[in-house]
Each structure stands twice: as structure tokens, then as C-alpha cells.
Image (cartoon, rainbow, N blue to C red; front, side, top):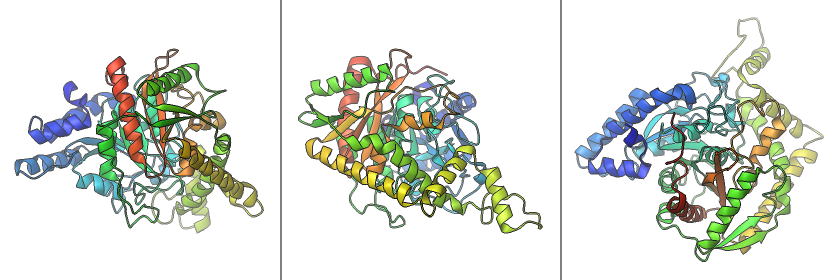
Length: 497
């Protein structure tokens, strides 16, 4: 079992295709790992043992018949519990949807099934994707496999923890302000936010519709690219989906190089609040890029300093609108419907019981920002700042091919440390938020351990919209250089559970 769970997704797919392993053997190994360690990690909210084994048997039958298998056929995957699944509950980490079985699969889920990926189950997350630590889940926090007393990032901490604890070789996350990249950074894994509209949002429960984006999570750059290719592409069911070919991400991951590329370093992505070890590892990564043949260009993007403030007006405003559908009348939790109360009373009681503190905080903040007399002063002004950030990116990409930065200002902080300080929690997304506001593509990959606490540090790579392949080209080059010099920071150094 140990040998199987340590394989990359690409290696697993190759061994299944050649007959060296069966999909059932691979699935059973990962289910056994979940059973052995998930009580400590709490990465999963729902494990679909029978469904996963049925999918695996179908892959083995295809191979036995000589049918062609896809690049990820038989590879297990952990799915963030924000995507609708017709055969598994979708709770979005909230009591208001506890036990809810959707009537349809999300487009992303349908694509995974069509690719013969084996879905192991649904992973824990901050309620409605609102948080940076997975502490806001109504079902309890997830632990970071590097140190179970620390956070695994958020909102997709369950997916990142499943990867880092070898419970799955692939996972799916969503990224509204950094919820794929920040968990990847603090768990030593790879996470990619595709260009906004590059992966369908149909069937992904909405938090902030102009910012939300699903994407791949993995332990290597190539694995992330293979998953990216499987889930991306135009979807007529999603009005924001881009009708254009998927960038050649797998080819880029297999032929990584930065020679001759111009790599930007933004001066706003460092300074007060950044952990010394994070800055040290980032500076070493920039030096490595230079050694590999990249030209380093200093950039000034002044509007990035306003990104956090703009985000925390735009995202709550959109959340207050999106979450209005959870009224206790149509589906999900219903409280107080005893025949004596009005519909308004039932809705109020349901929301009081079903939503957690952080969700309530953001709904109130967003409702206030959208209210009469305040719309232009708050939401309207934030959208103007968003335009300035987009223009800063456009000017930057006239000078460089990609931008690099630390993914997070610090390594994983202790569970509970920032629970009562929302502003301190929000600062975890300081480096990731500008990309969501502009709709660009971005990746986080491991760049070593911080010397002061021996915890993973993430390197963020940002590319222009629809140039997602540049992420993989640069990421693969950096990953190969790290492996050659120091070994993979996760595959060889992560603590065992």
C-alpha cells in the first residue's frame, strides 16, 4: 500500500494502462490510507467507498476489453465539497445543506467521470468557501499533515490535506481569493487557479460569482497539468465559460524551461507582515530562476496595496446576493416550520441555525455595502479599484512573461490563532487576491521549508489570462531544479502520520 500511495498520478495511470496495477488495487490502497489516517487529519466529509470501487472496476473492465484509456484513467481523486454530485451529499461545509443530495452532477464532475478518474469522496472546507484555514467548516477543522495542530489553508484545506497525507494523488479545489493556492503553499503541494472562465462553474455552489474558479490540486506540476486538461474547456451551461481551446498545459509541464523568459518581481509583495523564512525561500527561488536563464524584472504595481480592501467589499457583496437562495423553503435545512410561523420567520430561523459566524459576517458586510446610499461609496469604489489592479497587471505583462511572488506571507499558523481576528485571517490571502480580481491564471508550488519552523513555503507564479501554459512551463522548470538539488520538499520530507 505504501508504495502505491506514494506514486504520482502520472505513474499510477501508466501502471494501470500497462497492467502492472489494477485500478481496484490503487483505489483500495487509498481507501485503506483514508481509513488509517483521516480520523486525525479530517480531510474528508464523505468517503464513497462503494462508488469509488465501482468506478475502478469499470476502468479495469475497459482495459481488459482493450479499450483506450485516458491519461488519468483509474487515478483516485478527492473532490472539494462545493461541487454538486448526484450520488454523494454536497454540504459546502455548512449545516444549512447537511445531507443534501443534489439532482445533478456539476460539469467538472461529469468531465472527471468521462475521464475515468475515480472520485474517492468529498473534502472538508470553510463554509461556503469563506475562510483561509478550514476552521470555519461546520463539521470541524482539518489538520495540516506537516503539523496537525496547524491549519492546512482554506477554504480548500481538505483537498490540500488529502494530498499531503497521501490519501489521494489528485484533488479539486476552488479559488475565490486564493483558496487553491494558499492551501497548496502551506501543505507543500501544487495548486492552480486557471484563468477565470477556463473551467466551468456550472454546479459549483456560488460564493462570489465574478471571482470563483475551480482548479486542479496535486503533488507535482505534471499531475496538476493532466488534471487541468481533463476539467478545462468551454461549457455552454456556464455563461462565463471561455469559448476557446484549452492552453497546452500538459505539453508545457513536460517541457518546462525559463530560458529567455522575463520574470517579474512585484515590490508590493513583500515587507511588513512577511515571515523571514518565507522571504528567504522566495529570494532563493528568484535566484534559481536567474540561474536557469530567466531575466528578472522589478515591477511596481501600486494598486495591489488596495486589493485586500477591494476584495472584502466585492466578495461579501456577491455572497450576500448568492446566499439569498438558502431560505429554508426550497431545499436544505428548514427550522421552525410548525404551522404557526410565517415564511419569513422560518427563513430567519433557518439561516440563524444553518449559517456559521463567518458566513453571517460576510452576508451582513455585503448587504450593507450594497444598500441604498452606500452602493457607490463602497461596492462601486471597489470595482473601480479592481479596474486599476487589472490595468497594473496589463502594464506588467507588457514587460514580463510571468510574475512571481510568495504565495502566502507566512507558513501555516496554529489552529485557533486567528479565529477571533478576522483581519489577521484575511491577510493570509494578501498575495493571491489581486489575481482573482483581474481574472489571471496563477499557480503555487513548493519552494522549500522555512528555516524557523520547518514548514512548507509556496512560490506563486502568475500568468496573463489564457496563458495558463506559462505557469506549467515555469513551474516544471523550478520543480525539476528543486528536485535535482534538494529532493522534492513533499515527497521526501513530509512527516508520516
